[in-house]
Image (cartoon, rainbow, N blue to C red; front, side, top):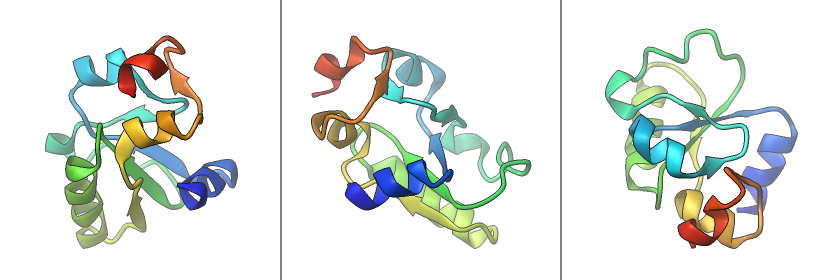
Length: 101
């Protein structure tokens, strides 16, 4: 988790691969919603490494594999948004932190 946090601080982009309604309930602060069904499109204009996230990590892992197969540098946030919130890292909306745990 600390590595993912450092990557975000360094400017890498978090892609939340859940459906829009899931994303709206709570997501990693600054994450961009690109549902897994649309990948690898939707990230063409994003430079640098990508970190994928979902609720617990399963979809994010599949998404990272899709992105790597498409020639992108992509990593999964282990444990997903729930682990991110449990570590005390920022989520949006702020009230979602309790729900995500």
